[in-house]
Image (cartoon, rainbow, N blue to C red; front, side, top):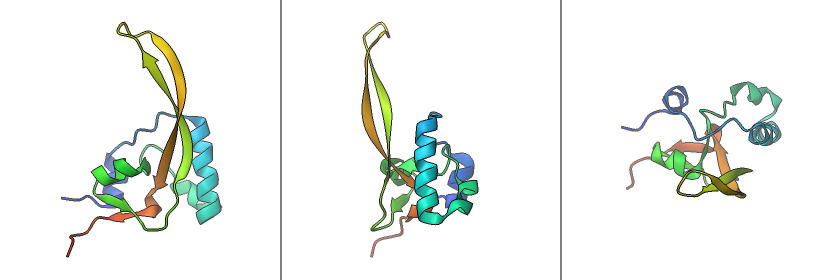
Length: 106
């Protein structure tokens, strides 16, 4: 059974790791698109997710919506767990107002 947006936001955590840069990027994008009053609804741990994360929860990105672009740092480790190198990887995020439930196909 597919959960509602409200149920997803209250129960399931996103992959967000607490990056202030990502939070600032998301705040700026949401202010620009929905206005400054929408910031009070923003919660990076619950309602901003990647395309695939929304799909796993039974939601799809609405046609024409543009991703919020951020970056993450990925660590490459050896077999002992030592960090060999870090590299940047782009992340494409979508706010809960940009998605809709996946309905039955006709």
